[in-house]
Length: 268
Picture 1 (cartoon, one colour):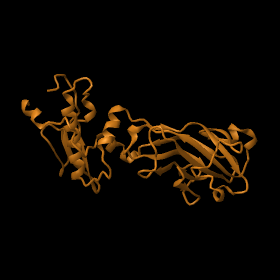
Picture 2 (cartoon, helix red, strand yellow):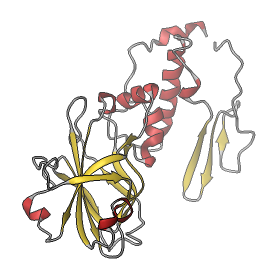
Picture 3 (cartoon, one colour):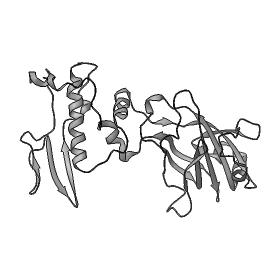
Picture 4 (cartoon, helix red, strand yellow):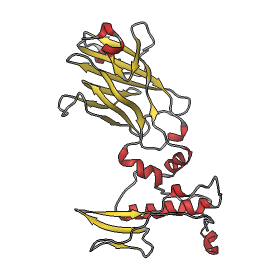
């Protein structure tokens, strides 16, 4: 059916208590308290742009993986068909690197005055530019040694294709502690109760309906508190799919595609 030579890795043998198909493309083995499922044929092996008829094989390969995952008790929680479409068109992290607006909060009044609110205008003269990622004392030498709160604000847009895709805010680290708001709603914080808070990755989930898409702007606000030496963002700063769900986003289908016609397989 493929009309082309393909090399596919297969399982030659499994341990006692495991099983595999005769071809070795599907297998299961026990690992500690769980099971490891091996499926060697991936939907990404089939490119319908190159051969339109391969859409049927791609969809059914996705369904195979979906059935295996469902049988393992995995619940998707969202419709994964839009995620599948995103993957076909390219799924990239949404980078938040660039110039943000910042404001020192020497008297600790920012929270009381609502600097995290969407209606706050960070384009006013009280705010200034700051590059992210980076430590504020290295980027702006006169800020070196500043102890206290600094508020960061960024306006950004997200393409329509990311709708219905599970997303989170990720920062490689924020030195020292922080709170984060998206469009005025709090999405997470890291305090001194977190082990190694000054170097811990930040993973803040974005709830459904909070992110805006297309031409609408989003406003991300981060309050960083520095209690020693310098502070700021370290490493990547993105909106992205959580690592635990990336496999699902790439391959999971809850819904049939309209072109998936089982009678097309009669020629097999």
